[in-house]
Each structure stands twice: as C-alpha cells, then as structure tokens.
Length: 162
Ligand SMILES: [Cu+2]
View 1 (cartoon, protein in one colour):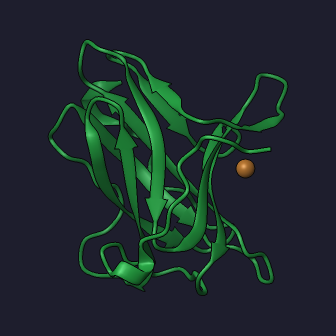
View 2 (cartoon, rainbow, N blue to C red; view 1 turned 90 degrees about the vertical axis):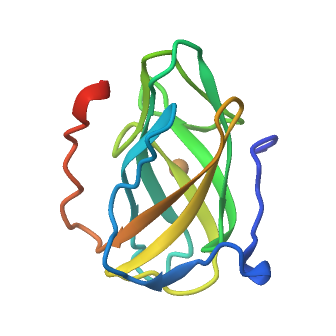
C-alpha cells in the first residue's frame, strides 16, 4: 500500500547509528543552511510495540519550494512519512513539500515519520540519527533524542524563521 517513500537502513554499514548513548549535545539539530530542522525527537515505544514515531519541524529559508523525499535511519528497518488529513485520518505519503519561506511541522496530531522494525530497544536518554533527504537541499543529518512515553515534547519555539 505504501509506495514510493524511501525506505533504507544503513545500520550494517555503520554510517548511521541507531540508538546510541546520549552525548553532550542533543535535541534540535539545525544547520545554518537553507533548510533548518528543529524540535526533533523520537517517542519511545511502549513494549511490545516495534514501531516508533519521529517528529520534527522543517523550515525552508529559501524562496524556492523544497521537498522531503525520504528519511533514512539506522534505528529501524523502515521509515515512512505519515501526515494527518484535515479529518484526522493518517496517510502514508511519498514526499512532502516545504513551501518557500514556510515550514513542514510533524508533531502530535500533525504527522510523523514512522520507524518500523526497530533494531533494538529505544529508551529515553538515547538518540536516533535521522538523515532527511531533500530534493534541493540534499541530505541533512539530524540527531533526535528519544523521549519517554508521555514525557513533555521539546519547546515549539521556532526562532526567527516561522
Ligand atoms: Cu503513522
């Protein structure tokens, strides 16, 4: 049913790690480039659930639309973008547009990247590496902290670009 969205796992190659110990710096990772990613986190699943949802906000600082084409993570076998329609139903989509000078918000009730076939346990205090692939901006690496079920989400303050 879900076609098109890039599904890949690089865990074996060691290029992208899955769940690793939390280092000094975590949370929202953003580059000072044309695409800025903020408020990234992964919600730890409640066992025996084998999927986890990743959330983040993508801000496009350029005057040209960009498109999120896929997500790669070492944390699980699959990563599928889900968006929520106006009526509340969730849909897997092949890609998502980030409008010029606009943003794509994946947050509770708005959508997420569903990581399936988790390779290991995800617990609060770990981080998950995500590679977001954009049509124009190319790949952007994000380090998303794992949050315990039910714990508060990161600040939604988005700085100067919204
Ligand atoms: Cu979903």
